[in-house]
Image (cartoon, rainbow, N blue to C red):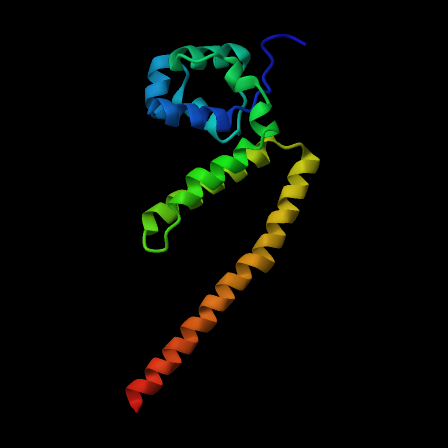
Length: 161
């Protein structure tokens, strides 16, 4: 197989590198000469760069290109670690902005994982997400609505008495 194949999924790696280097996709585009639209697609694994493009990105970031093509990130379960340590640290019910950032981060990781999976893997991911949506998330929303209705009922009763 040729060195310049087009099937590298670099989203998680690229996002980490941008965070570490404190760069935006626009800045990386300017430094690397890679179109910003393509960089955004690489970030969510909607598109895969060639090895030549990866080398341009790595050079612009002053990094070893192998960082982007090595599967050890998934093998060492660092995806889970990054969710636990970075995103869940942002979750604080008094800070809506950080909760939205955590939600967006989790959503990006789901997109990256989905876009990196085979057709069989995508089906499994969809089945799991369907289960989570219809059971687990529904319970949270249902419980909140019941608590809200109970509190409103008590407030109305208290106000009338």
